[in-house]
Image (cartoon, rainbow, N blue to C red):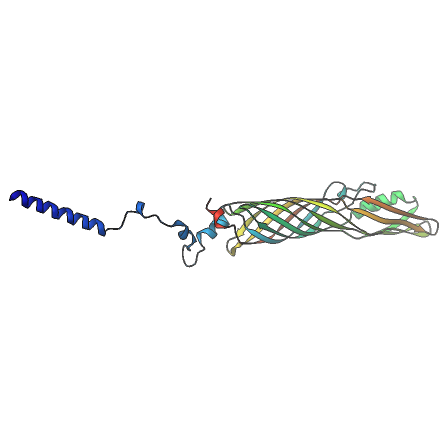
Length: 287
């Protein structure tokens, strides 16, 4: 009798324990959590989704458009002042650029630019060399010049390397450069006679190459979509020109038809504002 009572008590205890376990929630290991849905939820009512924040701040490039202004520093023969045809006599100038990029992979895409840069003429150097070519008794020359004008349209591959808040941009672009060579005139005296020198303006075009690197930083107090940037670029172009150079006085006239290729390369330093938009699909963010 005592053994039967003991068995009944043990049986009832086992049934009670099983019932309590059945009412409890399964442990976390047996109930996986859908983490992808959690990523898409805002951290709070005022914050962006986790994916959007990662796209901006953790190594994922974004599309952009930008505008910038800067200085145009002529290179090699374009800025030289030697008394030869290939010297461009270009001074330091300024430039304006409109850029954009579209990202097709995590950090790789295509970029394009519309750039205008202009350089003045080193008048003192040009006048000195011109006077050496004219008769020695030419005096009182007054030189007037225009400016070199370059318009550039180019596109090519683009790489963006974001690291925390700083983004490094690299690009290699090819395109077309259209250049206007300035007109140069000088009025002087040849003995008691007047003398006029004119180098006519001309228009030329050529393929162009741009190698550029830039850095940008977000305007945190305004918006993470807007960034300030600085970039340095080498622009290489060598357009062909055909123009007339003539010297006119009552004593003699000289008329030359000239055709040659002039290097118009520049090192450009630009600063401006960039607006970023869009980001790569979620499949790239979680890597």
